[in-house]
Length: 359
View 1 (cartoon, rainbow, N blue to C red):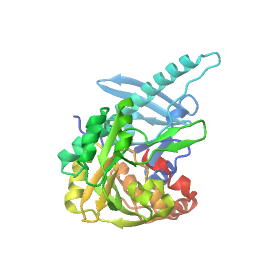
View 2 (view 1 turned 60 degrees about the vertical axis):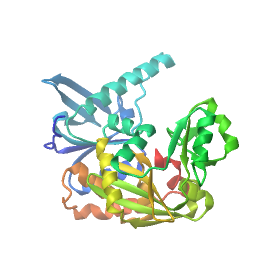
View 3 (view 1 turned 120 degrees about the vertical axis):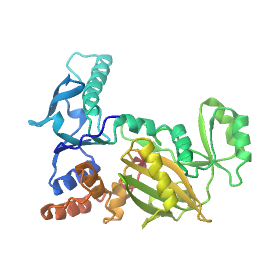
View 4 (view 1 turned 90 degrees about the horizontal axis):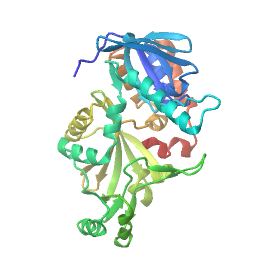
């Protein structure tokens, strides 16, 4: 693997136009005095263009955003934060042609940017690999984390044997995105849900993901940013919330917490093993103080926690990581602006604390 190039002076923030995280990280980078170029992949052909050529095994050329040109060799780091894919459409194109042209645009633009030998937070290929739940469960155990016993399958008899081995019952969880889009404006969340023996015939219709249920005292959301860990204890005050804290966001309280050293070291090993520089991990702690790892979110949302805990510092840590200097001082003139952004970004409870956290 080639060493990461650190001699550039520009950070690319690739995110959706309405991204609260994109707003916050861009402002924090500017606060550090870093040249920052923010855009969405969907802006290709509108305000974004690229002209690149492979020369000597490296892509060279120009990325232009709103008439502002950046040499690819000057990119120090790239922050990939839920960008919108490009959609290419010309009058007269069929839907099939539009889909093909859009896929070509994504493969070209994201492909060239993905080859840049700089820090990527996170590289799309690493993100995709870390979203395969079966692989994450195995990797977490190898890293030294305790994972609730886990079953994936389609055989009801196997599911029943798995259920018999759990003293506190079992739950079902999604393997992909924890939501279903129903229509243009409605998203149905899919929470961790207890199941009983009579439910298990249904596993024959497809693939089901089951885990032994953890009787949770509290949950923890741990954010790994480079070599730093910023964690929050999440206390749910309802039965449904203790099964899945996303189910009752109005019942939650939040407290900063320090992870046990062994848990933090194992979590760092897991994240680094996937080549990630940022991840949000979900853990559960039972009444005996035992820690269980349950999920790795390589592109996990976090701004809702900074709205609850304004001094949490995840945005600042990300900006310092992208800038390449964890000790770089902030410029006083923009610190107040960053604080104002947090104040202005208070959403309704369902927007702020909804299922979109996990995507």
